[in-house]
Image (cartoon, rainbow, N blue to C red; front, side, top):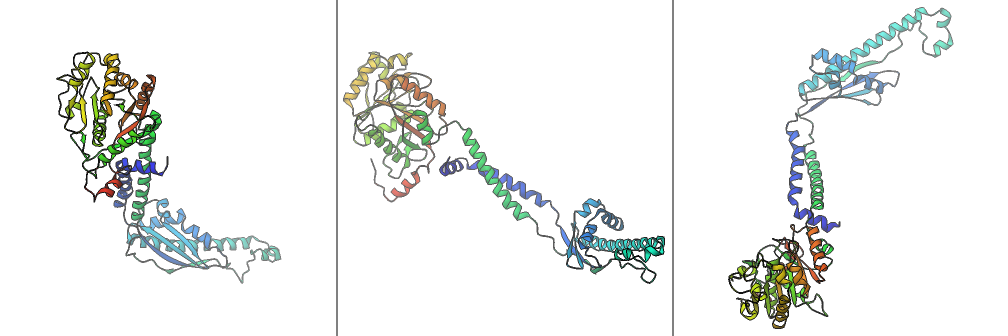
Length: 471
């Protein structure tokens, strides 16, 4: 897949991308509405010590033992682990400790910070007292020669009556906490931006997966890959047709432009042997092959060519009714093939110059046999001599063999695929059926492409100032 494929997928499945992005963004934003604001305050402790132990004291400040003492002092409804999670102690070279406390209540944050600091000072005093008592007891237990030994003096255990204090660390509160007036900045904006980014990426991924699982045809490569022939026409959905018949008088109509392009591509499909008898059919019902055949005939007639459209779907004909002609009530193709009517009498004129119609006639019980008969070959030969172009609006290729039989005695077939409806497998099977009877596949036509794709908007913009009809 290239970048154009991703752009196409996003355009076609933008609802998936949009909904996913909105849901993920809301999922990231809504929790912030229920998050209480957090306040932070701090105290500053001064440590007087002969040993560089600030990092150790910082660890003690964030320990559970000190937290429990603070909880007991303030009668807090929390565990030591919960309190420790909101306390941070940072050494400030070389004799200071910066203690930060966070809480959802600004007053409680101050109380915790102050009490924690006070309890730390008290705990350090207790440790210092314990150390002095232990040192004194050790002194009394030592023999005089040990007390006077140079080794003990060097190791720091020399305690004399003149120096009973080993100078323990002393901690004091340099700065008390204050009540914070503003809450800490929230991550609301960051969460929304992150949620939107993740939502868009996830939405695009879901759209790509959905497109990958889609078995229908939607672009040139899909059509050409299944039928083994070029795509010679892309007909968009949108304004530009009336009652199913294309309006070629609108020079800015993408639909009209698409049919003129189809006409040109068909005329030059085989420069050495241009096709004049053409079968237009789709793999399955409801894929607009009859409308495509009709509008192709209208486009050819608009260029001054004599054209006969043959309503060759003898099961569910639609072309005659689209033109306002009652095709099944009078003589038509079925009547001619059964020898019940003359071909000349069965051909009807239409309101379009140079365009004639051979309606279906009464619906027979055996369409496949009639269309594969010698009489059908005779009709094709006669129509070829009388008209510049003969366009058969054929029945669907997969349910029945009617169109395949006609294609075998024509110059070739156009396979019509409906955008987002015709399945790739059905398109391939239809092409195989045609090749199975020795028919030539002239190309494919993709109908129903959304307006705005494949340059239709550019065409409209180019011709907008010019209102003259184009044929």
